[in-house]
Amino acid sequence: MSRVQRYRPAWLDAPFAGTEELPVLAKLLPEAGSFGPLRPVTGPGRPEAQQAVALETARAAGDGLGVRVRVLGEWDSRTSDDVRHLLQRSDPVVRVDLLLDLGAVRADRPDAGKEALRALDSLVPLAPWRTAAVLGGGFPHVSADMLDHGLCEVPRTDWRIWHEIGVSGRSYRELLSYRDYGIQPAEAISRAPRSGGGPSWGFLRYTLDGSFVLGRMLASGNTRTARNRAIAHEYLAHPGFRGAAASGGESWLRDCAQGLGRGGTGNFSTWLRVGNLQHMTYAVRQL
Image: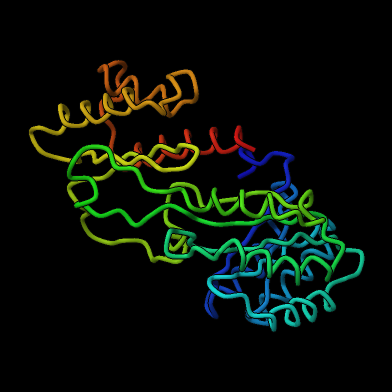
């Protein structure tokens, strides 16, 4: 953590900490400041003990507090009262960041942008927010049948929603920033780790302006290497491919397709790492 963050600030959140984890969290949060300016996060609806630990850590550390407000469907105006009461418990000198979390934002939520604006209209006036981030995850749940015929493109709905918010004409637009769940479904953060053997296939991810491009990779079998190199070739031939120099993700795709280097065609962790590399590089350059 200290190598990755160094002196750059970040939010530190454990949104699904339960009764058993709270004592561990209470010990961890105050110690986390030694790694750099890691700001504790809490939010409405969380256990009072978790809120208290985050509020006290923010007061003692002096780096600020993140307030994460989840909007997973229609905006509930009563949430504003919960946030107001939470802020009243915070030390007035602690600077606060608003994290508006839309969760999974896919094609089945066409009104997510409108609900986000309703939430922001209610929440922004509650405090002199230092920053306000809109979080959303457009990455799909991937099934085998989606990948039966080579590369598959699915809409990057969270990015479209961000543009919808951006052109709304709200006075607080300059306060807002874009954040996402990367190249995994938003629900993945709440899943317990899988035990036992995994599937015989995985997939590559590639991020474009308006879509994600997915391609199945084999984890085993006699045709594994040839099949995986063929999929990598399809990415190189895709009109949205940004070239091998774009990031470490693109250079890996080139090496995989052409049989260069000693990395072979990868495994589950490789495909996830490569996907994260290209996505984070591209998403940052889009902003």
